[in-house]
Image (cartoon, rainbow, N blue to C red; front, side):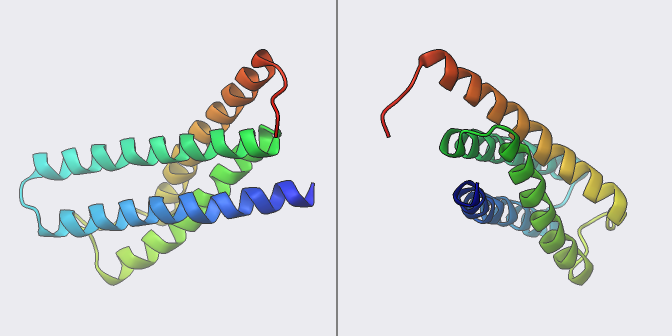
Length: 136
């Protein structure tokens, strides 16, 4: 179990770091952009990138540990890590239109992290079981 937690923690830091980079890059681009339609498109693209990255996190953690529930935990931890960094950055350089309340941002970020990671981890473990044992 300790080895599985270490694998999960490694992937949380790796994929969580990529999500942080994507969020901060989007925030920096949004600060330089004009027009509400551009801001909405950037926000939508950022959400899609986040969902894809969290889904990859869930599938990788479930595949490497064999425990699909660790993928949801990995999504939770990575989303909390991302929220801490992005909220700190937002307090120093607010995005256009003002900052989102902390509780709303945390809830949305956790939802965008846990749900895709948990679902992809579950699907990955079901595919793994259906395909039979593999050599390691």
